[in-house]
Amino acid sequence: MRKFNNTEGVFMQKKLIFYAFLFTTSIKAGEAMEVIDESSEHVPSISQSNTKLLYLYDTYNGEHSSKIIRKGSDQKKGNFFILDETIFYPQGGGQPSDTGVFVINDKSYNVSFASSVEGVVHHYIEGDISNVEVGQVALLKINMEKRLLHAKIHTGGHLLEGVLEKFAPELVGFKGYHFPEGPSVEFKGKLTSLSNTQLIEQVNLSLKEMILKKHDVIVKEVDLEGLKKLCGNSDVPLNDNTARIVTIDKFKPIPCGGTHIKNLSELKSVSIRKVQNNKGNTKISYIAN
View 1: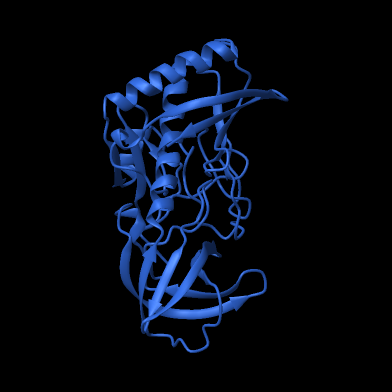
View 2: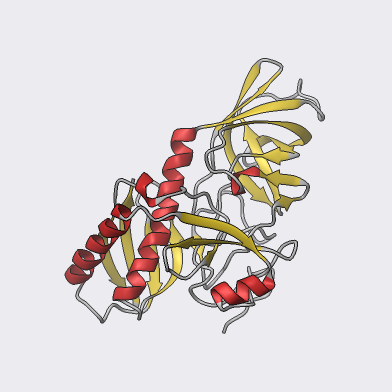
């Protein structure tokens, strides 16, 4: 089992952290790629520097009123707000940021990006915020069409990884890109169990069958003992002595901090688009909607 120090991004047993979300000081604002082995990600706590992360509880919550606890600006992305509670998912773990608006005193402020900066969620605002005071309440509204698309793609990645293990156990996931623009999962190892064509045919059929069975996507928090029991692993970094895990059917639970749909019936389809072999690794591009 390989470990890294905190400045590199820790981690852990090869598959269990496949879709965990990065909330460490090693994250770079705007970083898109989810890296599992070489630079892994912590499972988030329910609070992050006094900001309650409401998207962890409810993917479908598109509006919420929150208090501004800090405002500022950085050279790359401009003005930002930090809140006591947020429904905005900050980009990371291979999943895009939510976008939307803040409504403050009947004035709308576009939120173009949210990211975790040194462990704090920054909501980047288009335009001037000089008239907004710390302590004011903002009505948060996220773009729900984007939110649900991102959740479907992310859940589709979980489903793909789970199904693929049955057909090609020699492949070990280490990097995921769950953006609408060409989502993919990269695996250490070369495909040997099947040909590329056979893998695509058999996995796509199994993915279709899984969706038709309408399995629930179970998200819950567990303590260290629960983590050992469900995941067989005690090396996942815990926050507030808990870890958040996601389970589909009988697949192994995966520590994860992303947004997910409640049931596979919300997916129209998940399918492999292409299998590529490169320098001993395998990249599988997929479609989920």
